[in-house]
View 1 (cartoon, rainbow over the protein chains, first blue to last red):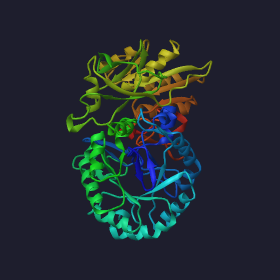
View 2: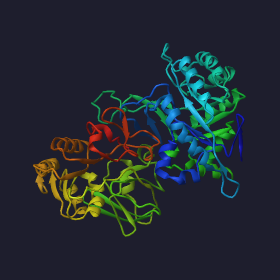
View 3: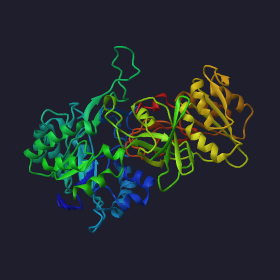
View 4: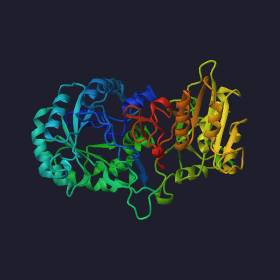
Length: 303
Length: 255
């Protein structure tokens, strides 16, 4: 059941989606139960930016049909705070984390993937270079769902912009570089191909789909948005068929490994993404409903 | 497993067998969902689990107070004995008991009286309990806390007016109390402001829509005094009132 991914050996193919599992908070809430049976074969951090971010104004959540719209706004301590405060704690959790099926040799220790985002190539290069120095980080994931400062368009939405940014930042790390593609683009396979050609070691998808809910208490004929940031990103079972289509299209277009995610609730959903060409599958929103969901899915995949 | 479901005026009290493991402290909450027919309702909701204060722990059961306000609460209120209730908890920071020599004043509004019942169980009869409700049907919820002084908006039970008017009278000249409050944001904000003015410490149990309950989603963030945010699930739900500038109206997303 163990899986090779960018030179790393993982106990099973199930990891977390960035921003859907705070291992430090979970350790404080669940204690040793978390590390005794860690749900993921690798841990992906939430998105880290150069400067600290407070996140978006409330409300940040809306429950939609079989899904969740969020506009959290990537709150984080910034690069320095992450490297100094969070990473040592995450490394402690990751090295103590036991994952794997009961009944076969369990592994102790899982790799950490650090997810970063910047609005310019220079910012991203600085993030990658700083992470390059830290042995606790096994791989980097680049969130390209960030508006480009000059065009205002998401870096990852335009294959040419994506390729140009990646070409500039790729030399700043020798660690595996995963590009977290945005689904909010005309042709995700073209973007994936551009990422591969510009040096990405893997791609991950899908990120949330841009979505909106109107305020239930709004005045008649007004378009007052519910979320503090007006729009947010849709996740959960509602996006599962979209994820499958995008993962299949990307897997057919690239030769690098693909991390598939989007609405996975059960082993059958993970199996679909693996069959569509994914090497790893991430569990995201389902962990909100059940923090042990990923472990349950990994165990069921073995049967 | 659900062991009993009983009506209490406009509310439903849900009894469930206590899960193994850690038992709740007053103010803690659990994320509830149903094993069957969770989802697939109107608009394909509910989808996420819902956060509820643990209202009482007795005889190997946890009790929850529900008001039917949406698809999640409706499904939970429709549970029958024998059905499986999924509960993740106890979660969050509880109330801190008053220091020796200080009396406790409990202030609750509507379905927010829930965590005050278990707090009252722990503190005993000496605690002063002030509860506010919209109407007489809801005021039946006061049966959860024997000896409570009740206010109703429509005057059908007890004092006609706001529970915060009762608190204001209670706080006159008071220095040795600690206030414990849970209820709608507008009530919590009035309690916070009254206690700040009277220099009486207050612990507020906040409500916020949350997707997870254990610090993962960052959806329940409320602005912290001096900048930044508090996550209601892991920094609360019970917070020292001095940590916020105001109890926000929009903190309760209709999840």
